[in-house]
Length: 177
Image (cartoon, rainbow, N blue to C red; front, side, top):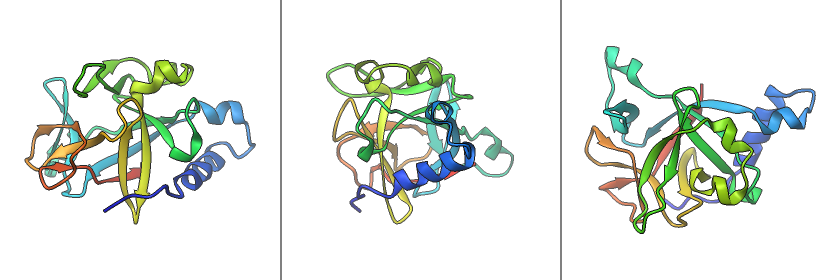
């Protein structure tokens, strides 16, 4: 499934209008949103041994699910819907490593601090959000062509891939909570 540039900007505008009905753009730019994210195979994200992993959480274990906090990154071209993702109340951000082979890592940095950074400084924390028929993809701004992915196996770390397929799931559900 090939996501297209979506009416995601319309979703953002709707969310901003709900959160900022008076049109205060200064506040709207710094708004942090909270969402659920899970892959199309119904694996939820949770923290295990300081890694964000995807697995099947049922019953009381569902409480382990990490909520995703995100903020719109205005340092990038807006038609790509750039966002910064974090967990743990926005205190730990997802980032692409700066190594030769891109890898996903968690960094102890507040999401609202990144909002103030330039494109160069916030790029490795930024993902371009695309949507098709309610299925979302998250492409790394720092590593174009690399997408957030889960493994086809449960309880494996969230990662990055440039080869979507059965073993690397790049399609997610993304829902405000």
